[in-house]
Image 1: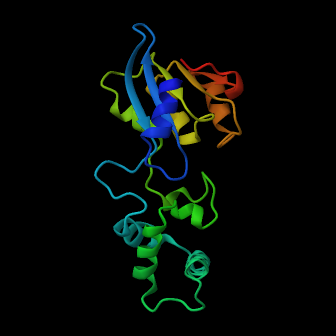
Image 2: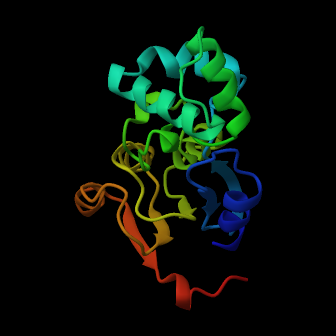
Image 3: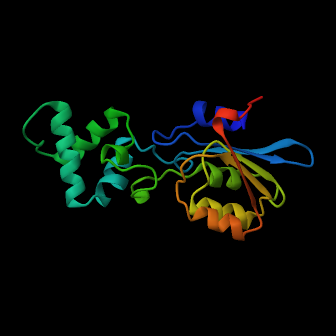
Length: 194
């Protein structure tokens, strides 16, 4: 768990959730994979103007555009919208260095389509050099989301260790209860990191 924490806190480009994962072969006690939240390889980060203009902005509803414009006016301390607002707003959002979904007031799991970030669990699974069947996963987060839970179970991960905290999506527990993957939760205050 200690290495998953280091990956979450030190190697994670996601501005919203600091999640790290380590995959271990229990037979050898060797690390075979790791992952963190971040954009797909070779794609722009969510604070890049290109991402904001071509991925984020086109998906916004009219209400969300109004929210972004209000945020812009508030931060810039002005009372009017910019003339070419999409380009100028995307440049402004890039300079903010904040998760664009968080600027809209969304928490993790809300409007995920506005973010290209891939979750640490799936990134770790995708990078494994060996089949995942029978391996153990250590997640520096709570119970993985529905999509990650499904991927973990389908990959054949034997056991998932995670932090005991508020569920990201509570129905993920149901998948683990019915899949062949054991879920082990650890209390953060009593967790001993080596």
